[in-house]
Structures are given as C-alpha cells and as structure tokens.
Image (cartoon, one colour):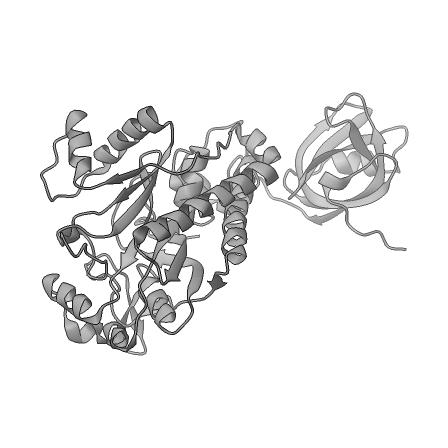
Length: 435
C-alpha cells in the first residue's frame, strides 16, 4: 500500500514514513552524510550511513543543493545525538525540484536588508521565524472569528471598488472602471452600514483596504487587511468598545494557547491584557498630556508623540498596554460619526491603541438622516455624490456602530517586530508593488 505523507511534527520512532520538504542543511562527515528536511510543520534530520546506504545514495545526498524539494521514504529511529531525539534512516530519496544557488540567505546567519529580503520574499519565508509570524497572525484572526461567530455575527463581503471615495481626501487610489473613474476603498464601513440598514444586525468583514499615502515609515502600508465589525441597536459607543475588548481577548488567548512553538522560536511572550481597558476621553486628555509636558490646543487632535505619552500614563496608572481614546473633536473626524447632542464639538468616535500605536478607529455612527446631511454640509462634501449612501437613512436606520481593526498592525505590535512589512506576506508601499 502506498504510504501517505507524514508531517515532520507527527513523526514517531519505529514508523516507516514518507516525508516531503526542503533541504535546509547538508553535512558530509566522510562515512556519514546528513541533511535537515524542513516542511511547513518543522524539520527532521535525515541520516545516510555509508555502511548501510544503497549504492550511490551517499554520493547523491552529499551533492544535494540547499532548498531543493525532496521526498524521503525511510524509518524513524531514536537518536541520542540529536536534540529532537529522532532521525530518519532513508530507504529512498527523490529530488522533486533541484534548487539553484540562492540569491539571499533565508536564515539569520547572514544579515540581509529588509528591502532585498522582500525582493526575494518567497525565499525569505523559508526562514522558520518568518513563517512563524504568519502562523501567529492566522491564529489571531481565528480567535477573532471564533468570538464573533459565537456572538451571532455574520460574515459578509463588501466591495473593494467604489464609485466614490469613501472618506474623501486625496489619499485614494484611482482606477479605470470601464472608462469611468472609480476608487479602491479606504474602508468598507459605508457598505457595512447599509447592510445593517438592510436588516443584518451583527456583521463582520475581513478584507483589504488601500490608502495612497506616500509614507516610508515602519508603521505604514499602502494596502492593509482589517477585520471590520458593525452592530445594530446599540445604546452608545460603549457597546462597540465592549465588543472590541472581548474580540482582543479571544484573539490573544487563541495565540497563547495554539502558538507556543512559534512564540518560542521568535523569543516572544504574549500577555493577555487585563480588562476593562482604560478609557480616556476628550477633553480630559488635554489635561493628562499637559501634565506630561505636552500642550495640545483645545479642540485639536493629538499627534503620534501624544499617543506614546498616553501609553506611558496608562502603563503607570493602569498597568495595561491597551487603552481606548473616545470622543474626539468632530472637526478632525469624518461626516458619518455621531456627535454628542448636548456638546456637538465632540464625536462619539473611538480609537483602540496598543503600546501607543493606533490599532482601530470606530465608534457610534450617525443614523439620523437630517443629522448626516447636516454634518456632510459642515464638512463641505458634495451631497449629490453621497446620495447613494445617505438616501437609505430616510427609511428607518437603527442606532449602530463599529470599528475596523488592522490585522498586520496588531500582529506587528504584539510581536514587537521592527517593521510592519514583516507581518505582510507581500507588502505594498510607495516604492514596492512587486512581487
């Protein structure tokens, strides 16, 4: 009977197995040649002993090119000389695809610049540490999906091509749509809101968004992925905050439970944050920052330095790396946010920050037609171009809110990696559109 492939993580001594993967190291010690075979689950040493090897096998193995794809059939045996405690003694080795000399070193032995690594991204991913990042990112998303589905949220799919810029401004990518101008979405939020008006009360959407921002910093991407959540019949923005808080807990617990080996490989620890997350609100934020030596004019938004200062304050006072900032000045927020009726200079707009870096933006949306039109006018927007969105609010829109959480950014901060592009398989930046 034909053997089925066994992942390296499931090998047991005494078994005859078939393994497939890449050759990561080859060492020739005269009468003994061995190599590490690596697959997506780990690695295993394959040892060829001259006295036991079939004719020509020792020579063939010694000439194996690194990163070639191979199939090995053999017996798993115990070995005290190997840290893993087992090795494979091969009966046959087949080369599926021979590798040429490598243009980069997919390991830490040679320091290669990030730009060059990204030029050769598929080879860069051969480093198990880089693969670990994406396994962890996948588990983060799995933990979020698990919580949302358990709470009755339905996954939906919203369009990526927009007939009008969703948030206005110049930081949008224009595309040709059958001879008509269109835009890549900045955020799927407006269509999520329309879905709620249609009767889908609790939804989430995972997908890409784009921003044509010419930033070359370690925290910016031109294309990023987010998990966007929206819910109906809320009392106020605090209902949204509670959902996001529990979403984070579910994601972190999932990573901590399922990614022990990946975290160990990266030398990282995941600390599940304490709840509730501290909630800071304008205008009191001005007082906190001023006491820390940072003066922000009343009614203005803070800057990235202020975000770090607020993290220091939260860390000292609440011993937490997460915190919410709520009730931003309306003048710095989009037209669709809800203002506080009794004090309309402030919006029910909420950001989640982690270690002083914004992770999501959200809050309560304005659901009253007259108010949306009024706010669009205040922002100087073209009411005709917004009609596709605003007209539905005439017909019974429930009080609602939500947020969009950046997945690469959360992974980046959780793992404390130097550049967010490390957490994106094939990052898009002002100077990078390939591979």
